[in-house]
Image 1 (cartoon, rainbow, N blue to C red):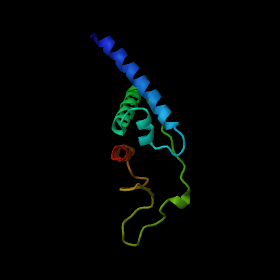
Image 2: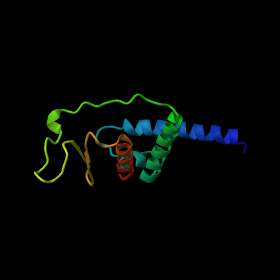
Image 3: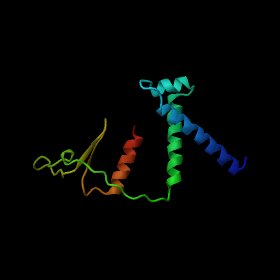
Image 4: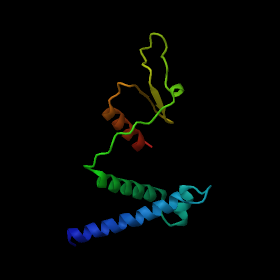
Length: 124
């Protein structure tokens, strides 16, 4: 099979998977991903594999493109105004997940924050 044929087959498969993912994300309220997968004859693991592959393909399409940096406004009351005396904690923003906590300050390098957020996303 030629590399062009393989690429066409891969693109077709990814488009099919993307349609399935959109359908799953539009599933009826109250229906779980597991329930949707069972009704469509795929496993939950296979669904998440397909989701990851579609996301990777989308990101590959953006490689080399630059996007303007966007600043998300944060309400001042959400910022930690001051740490405990002597704690050395700088004012900033705490990002909390079920298992992790990240404290971001004005001096946090964007590259570090991006790397940490990527790790947190993949640690689901």
